[in-house]
Image 1 (cartoon, rainbow, N blue to C red):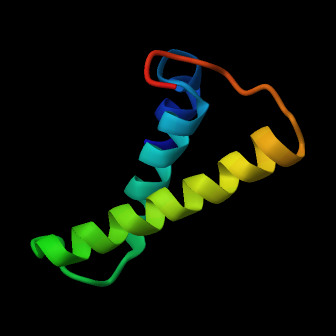
Image 2 (cartoon, rainbow, N blue to C red):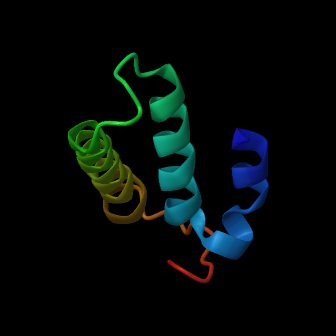
Length: 72
């Protein structure tokens, strides 16, 4: 799954593909149940926080150009 998202980075955009990959991997390895909405909200908030840190590191500090796609 992560390989497909890596290859889709040019189409989806770097940050969108990484967020989807992070959420997928986090959801697979999290021991909490998958049918609880509050757990999914927590996972989404952690994913948004992680991607915000990634954006700050790559775009603002390192000034690296990342692949742009449909969504970002």
